[in-house]
Image (cartoon, rainbow, N blue to C red):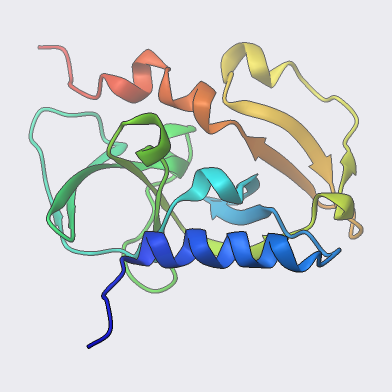
Length: 174
């Protein structure tokens, strides 16, 4: 009888095997869409990506906290990444996905995104001209990048996002 492995173990094993092959096309960034904003994040920080399961609503929380998701018996707090950044709420269903981002940091949290846009090679991007000091307002924005179609992407710094008080404290003040 074959041994059952988790999806996470399978993904980690696949990444390890791909790295061992010496393939030069290193698609180490995951493209996501949050509202109308294109973002990239490190694939290593992405964890699992899955369709949105049923969410249990939690009263007295911020609008961007969409609830709790049960993923194989583990509860994850779900943050609507578009709404967290001041955009519209993400419709659940269709191409919407949960990206489990906090496992490496010991936090069971997931980002609700409008869709994933595929794997990207960092060499496909150049630094974009600085527009405004976003990092003062949103320290989770790493860099602005521009692709070959002149589309500007924001790079998501997961570690910086996970320590933000507004991200961690989702309750509303009475």
